[in-house]
Amino acid sequence: MLFNLAIKNLIGAGMRTWLNVFVTAVSFFMIIFISGMYDGMRSHAKQVTIDTEVAGGAYWHPQYDPLDPFSYEDSHGIPPEEIRDLIKNEKAFSILVSQASIYPSGRMMPVTMKGIEPEQSIINLPTRSLLKETDGLIPVLMGNSMANYTKLKVGDSFAIRWLDANRTYDADEGLIVYIMETENFKVDMGTIWIPLERAQTMLDMKNEATYITFAKNISTVQEKGNWIYRDVDYLMRDMEAMIAADEPNARIMYAILLALAGMGIFNSQILSIFRRRKEIGTLMAIGMTRSRVVGLFTLEGGMNAFFALIMTLVLGGPVFIYFSMYGIPLPIDYTEMGLIMAKRLIPVYTMGLFVSTTLFISFVVLVLSYLPSRRIAKMKPTDALRGKVV
Image 1: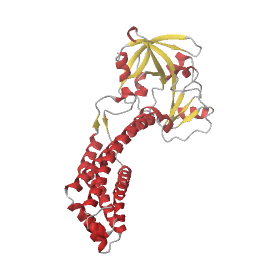
Image 2: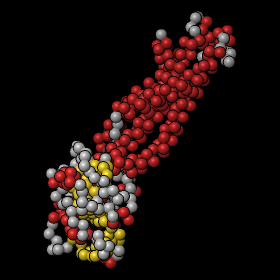
Image 3: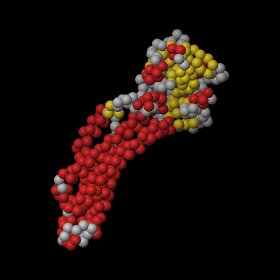
Image 4: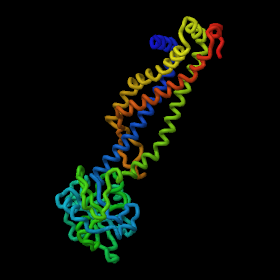
């Protein structure tokens, strides 16, 4: 009975109802749309990072700190035997990290020089290009952003200077053999890649490594010595922190949208109680309890959320489908800002996102519908019939 009566009252309110529904639907749409964008950013960054950098995880030398270049001089050693077995079985590969300086066109630039096994296939980097013959020069692989910054191209040579294990500076000529396109700025900016054996020879660190990256779905070794195990979540904590730091901006927008929708419904309920006071008095006079009358007005407000959900699915559904298939073109390259983002961001819309957003907004709408409806409990039927409001 209350449901049918609530539907009739909402339809009878005409434009006022549909304006409230539209504003609430906009809140639904924007919250789902922006949340999907953040989920898409997180999913894409994780996929690219796993694909091009961390794979299944890594074992770090105990002195290694990727944020402290001064630690590179001491963060190298021969991996434990069980980790070396993974490398022999091609389930892992070594990377040797050191500081270096390059001199393109006579300019000095500090870089991180990383030695990597050219024949590895665990991460998606074109390391096989390092197998090219270079007539004794050091083959160098670098990213597109690094090449643009240094103004180098394939076939260009430049001097490389490094500090070896004996604290002696040495230098040689490097040759660009390949420039890769990658969305992962951490394997691009400020980094040059050379063959692992060449790096070990240059640095006088035979069979040594800074960290070992292993393939996905590999069990953790038991005898890893003092080497430190790092899982995927740990290796991606910086990206998660960047995305989390931006999410408060989205929450402010959510709050503004909910406030607009809430004010519309709250004011609509106040106006409805004022205009329908004689109807309220009549309902109570014929035997409807105050709690049921309050429930009727609360249900009417809550129905706004239901109609808003239907409107969001009908009008916003095609938009969600389109962007999830073709993505959202981004106006600038965010990799320069330290974010792993595609040129077309693909939002991720999950059933959990729709359900949680629906439950949250419905709860807010029900509360805002109930608060003004409490005034009905204080009304006397005779006063309501005469048009008085408490």
